[in-house]
Image (cartoon, rainbow, N blue to C red):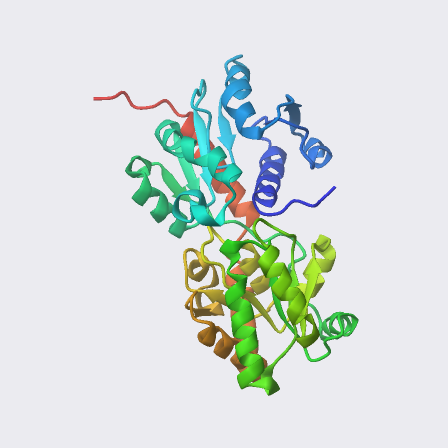
Length: 364
């Protein structure tokens, strides 16, 4: 069974902490048994699931009937939308508005499951959680009714994302055949991640500053509309670009810890958890100056324009040839990553639940 990523990590980390805190009795409702069901049950979560062909169909039809049975007081949806018929107070977490702002970068199925329900979700939600200030701004700009309901709660960095010792770094680099180090991207291969820019920048560095060139490793699963990218990655393999595929979590952490620089040039992110995890490992990051990424990286990374491959090449060259800069950015990254705590996020989410459960003031 695959390990959770993205929203799955967010949900699992928070639900476990909320359940173990004991303030709320938590029931997990879904249209199929969650992959992490046993882990959730071990934390004290009761799991219920009703088979349905699509999650959105279950959410809009069967879930309201279950909520109307009267034994549940609040619904929290960590998946961006709420049922249109909502018999109990609702809280929703908005991770991003890619379906609205960058629809061309998402499959039709994803857009179909989100776009018809965002407006009604904002209207009906008692409280809304945004995972970054950038996402909160996007939300209020698109849906003014969200103003006054939104609270920003950053994601956290999980256990194990820490700097590795010199010997461990050397061992990982040797295992990967890159003793001098490497540049790393980790994430899904899909248009929104802007990997074409990364390849353009790497090729520019290869042409103009070969002494600064390091191998480029690409970790992560195939995504939507990635066939052209996959072909380009394969064509560049003899020059030093290597696909690592989806890695087990422990191996992925080792690969991140040993990177010379972590590169994440995404066009749009609601938060950018891989950037925070790389910073926690003391690895300098290069990000696109777009959406939430500068908010997450702060002064711990080099930000480049998401359309400028020459600027990206220059950032890679600096991190490969200026060890003092790389070390300083790594140190800042470790410090900044301490701001991203799942314990803090769970504590604040519990406060949002309490606010949502409080009686609403009567309309004037």
